[in-house]
Amino acid sequence: MSQTPQTLVAAFQHSVDIKKSRFLAQATPVETSQQALAYVQRVSDPSATHNCWAYRIGQDYRFNDDGEPGGTAGRPILQAIEGQGIDRAVVVVTRWYGGIKLGAGGLARAYGGTAAECLRLAERVPIVVMARLGVHCGFADLTLMKARLKEIGTEFEQENFDATGVTLQLRLPQDQIAEAKARIVDISRGRSEAYSLE
Image (tube, rainbow, N blue to C red; front, side, top):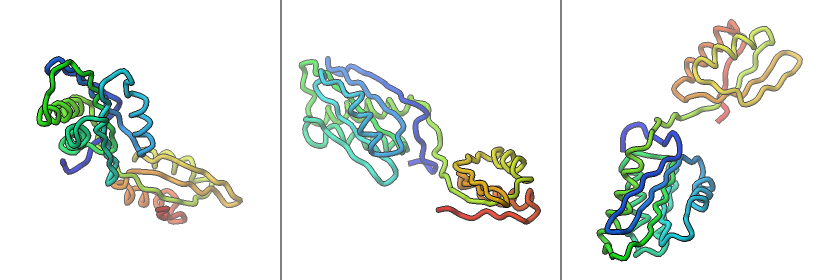
């Protein structure tokens, strides 16, 4: 695994023919196991011989051989995901049987290899660890505060107005917390301070 885990930018697919069988790998980024399983269901072809799959989302992972001999499909797909340093992704490899048996080793190479090549060719992006902060600021500081925090990748999840100003819920890259806190103190001239929402 590379230092910074990566995920896919968008859905991607790659197909290959191996001894008259066609293998199609389809991969997409996901945030939850529910999203992963919904994708498996959506892209699986009921007319195909097998729809084998695996996903990894942090420490959560699952794989399925869909009727292929145990350990010859789902696990090699999962190993391809891990070997490529990918996280928060699901890969479905669909096989249309062409009449020539591949054997256990051949199946593992076909499923794992098709998945790995799909992931290798797909566009990737580093996974940015996000954090959440809260801050209360006066009305006069709000416009400048939002503009300056947006510059460092901050998303504004919620704004709650009260008589003295506004409470903001912020989502931003973990490595920008110190910078965000400094900007908040600077803009409000020390009247506002961010606090963690985790």
